[in-house]
Length: 384
Ligand SMILES: NC(=O)C1=CN([C@@H]2O[C@H](COP(=O)(O)OP(=O)(O)OC[C@H]3O[C@@H](n4cnc5c(N)ncnc54)[C@H](O)[C@@H]3O)[C@@H](O)[C@H]2O)C=CC1
Ligand SMILES: O=C(O)C(=O)CO
Image (cartoon, rainbow, N blue to C red):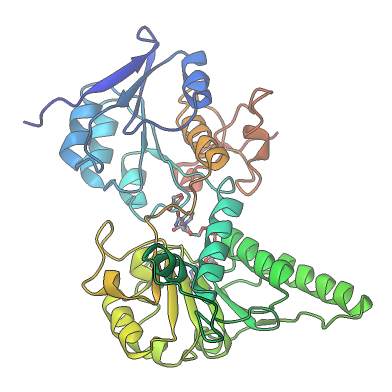
């Protein structure tokens, strides 16, 4: 028998019981739920990652909807329990939902929400920050300064790579990958090579137009190329950033063999999911190629790093903070809350445009912003 988990309660007499497995930023998300007659229970356990047993205890006998986190294992056990408790909706507070077994949710008729769009720019900004920090060796230089080792300017001190005119490679040119590409192209005048299963038409148009603008102003135009294979991106990119979803096609997409075809002084950035990179092979590669650098926000065995990674000077590591801006995190909480409103709301027809849900000063549309299994469950699409 799992121990009861500590909770904070809002609107105790609300008709619908909604649980959030973590406290989330802002208060708008709580207000939106309590305004719709929900009793909101927020888990206040000190444990960072809740186990399946902890969440089963939270769900209890009656529960209408749950907002959960990407660190939790949402599979058969939780969806069957939620369904038995009368629950109809679950939302991850994340756009990625590789921690969710959507087939199990379908089996129990539970809608699965995610939070796209609101984190696109914030996540791309962190990928861009890691790209610049790695290319200019900012973290190494900062450590050197704090250690009191700086005794004067030297021609060879922390020499890094110039980004202008180099090639930025993007693998997975969806919302975040495309936003990142634009930042690197517009900000640093880099040329683009990308690989995706689909054509990134808007991104291509942007690079073409920006290239024409530069040319008209007497500058070297930027260019783009859609690669026919991932290997092409790896061979040609000077800075390569990974932005695909994690599934079986992208697991260990970067492995020993693929690392070996990259340029010796390339920079690799991963703000997608840890298992997209074979981290053991990466550590070996970093040891053998001191001029190869990485910026990592995510790790294969998160929250742990593979042995040796923390010792590598040519690696910058940050704790899965790519979406961590105040506006984005509050927006993610809002979208997650609206996804679990269980009054039979229709599903928003364009999850790539979630702006109307994010305006603090006007009520959101009466729709669930993003339900990934809406078609499987035959949910009605919003006409708004
Ligand atoms: N580190 C962090 O804090 C964050 C991480 N993420 C991760 O980023 C991922 C992407 O997010 P969005 O850009 O919003 O999703 P998206 O769905 O717009 O883009 C994903 C892209 O990956 C492409 N893709 C899928 N399989 C592929 C393959 N085998 N090879 C090449 N491309 C492939 C898709 O066609 C799509 O264009 C999320 O699924 C999540 O895992 C997202 C936000 C924050
Ligand atoms: O949204 C996601 O997928 C994250 O990783 C956290 O923002």
